[in-house]
Length: 343
Image (cartoon, rainbow, N blue to C red; front, side, top):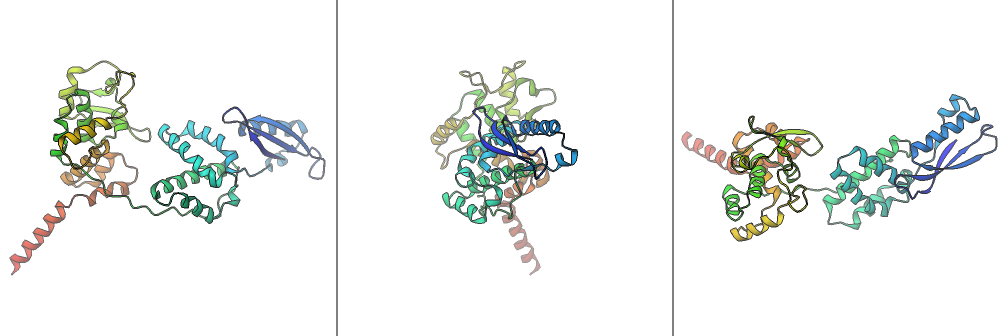
């Protein structure tokens, strides 16, 4: 008995499947029936046919599933992914899939070769980071197909393009003060102080609600990347600006036009950077870099910094050890002084 994909359904996440079985055994006549729905529903329908045909348990346990092409499995995978993964990750995966389907869509996993990975990378040779991410998402789709018995594992490990992450540029305090001189809105100023003093991402900071702030304890509960909760300390500047404006409920950084959280202050930062005469444009993430480098220089505790930034892999955090050279310069001066004292 087997299930074969025929075509996509007009209903998202569903398809038309052909159920094939032989009531009289392997040498008997073949019968088929079409079914429209999800893969899980098709399998349930298949089991109902087996039961009605009176086939024994051993026969049911050896049901053969025909390998699907990646394109055939994609609608169900995206439906599953949307229910089980973070919203931002799901959006990113959906953006990657059309590019991946150009090369891999018509293939089963058994047809994919290393040369196809090379062909995909060759489509955008200058986009090393993007290619690396797309191949990672391809592996995620294939792993899901294998787990659901829709495909066999790849016969090789895809080689992703080598990507060397650039060292982040961390602004100094005088630069932050310079742009703040041109920003008068208290909510925008509070948002900047929060990111600069806690290392919070803009996507974390802008989701804060008034009920998430504990003024007595001096903490703000936020939902960080990955869906976990984390407590941030309330910066002094944030308290001075926001305590007089406090409410019982609602978004702290609310866009008055939409009633939803402010998504970005990118234009505001660009304008303030230009007026302040900075040689670069300040961005949301530069505040996070500043917090990371200054925290590491102040305490030297890489593990603590990893927890503060909510990095899953400490390798991501170690990049900040390469930014500040002041410790190396100071150490070199101490070595020089020691050597001179020995003469």
